Image 1 (spheres, rainbow, N blue to C red):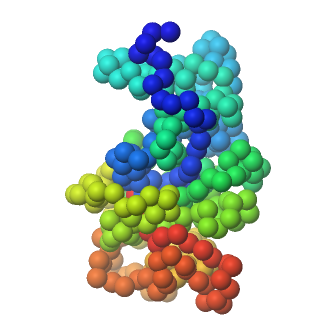
Image 2 (image 1 turned 45 degrees about the vertical axis):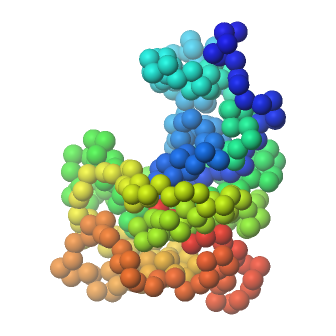
Amino acid sequence: MPRWLSSSSSRLPPRVDFLGIGAQKAGTTWLWEMLRADPRIWLARGKELHYFDRSFRYPSPNLLATDRFLERLFSRAAHNRQFRRRCWTDVRNAISHRDWELLRWLLRYYFRTCGDDWYLSLFQQGSGRVCGEITPAYAILEREDVARIHRLLPDLKIILLLRNPIDRAWSRIRFAWTLGEFDAVDDFAQIRAAIERPGPSLRGDYLRTLEIWESHFLRPQIFIGFFDDIVERPSELLRDVLSFLGLEPGSSPGPRLRQNVGKSREAEMPLPVRCYLAKKYLPDLEKLSVRFGGHAERWRAEAATIISEGVSGTTCRDRPINPDANYLTVPRWQCIPPDNKKDKVSIHGRANGE
């Protein structure tokens, strides 16, 4: 094997220390950018590996749905044709940039048979560092797939970022509009149909995600944060995430902490859409508010106000959060629900972002 293709990392067994599982449009790209800037952390070279959700059961990219490379190479199936296009593009770009470390990783990713050993091998280059990956679609995994992850990685740490589901849904619509999936964002029937599809509905079902993942992983293994804190207190959020991962606070990325790395086209949320989303999510927000208080309580109050008053005369842009408002009513490291059952909630950190 050519010298530049041989691994220069130590031969310690590959390990995965953490997964970022979502939520979609809730700050995962921001988190990925912040963590990969830390030399103590090694993230998979692609932000979203989509290994555990590669089944056609999921509304996810299914490039790895076919296990064997030779079948992916010659099959006429649409997902395999897409796999080949992405494979050649990524390999060509790595060669043109003379990024041999990336090329080594891509050869392992694209040219080997998929399986658990293959998945673990993708983290071999990160030996000696805290290793992980962020795939927001893991938030919609079914129970048996989360159980499989636990069997493979029982000591895994989980990072879940939550955002007001009303704003999260609208952010996803604006992103789809940016990609050309919508001609306009003022067609209520079209927007409602898009939101009610199985994929978007699952991605906004935080209670389902929490119930499934907490049924397999202990709550101290799960960091739950809130999007609002990327706007209000990004440095503290990053510090809390690092502490959860067992790392001391590093040097601050500076202005990049407040950078919007997933920007979509701006559009005001039509009032019918906002009222529809408020009614859709209020029952969940009431339960989230009881459990988490703080930001979740504000989300609940806003949804209730939208429904009761019809938000007369207001428009609903993705609006900035008041940095002076004290929405947090619980300590940073131990969020206790109103009934004070300490075994009910253990949250490492308060924050979440997009």
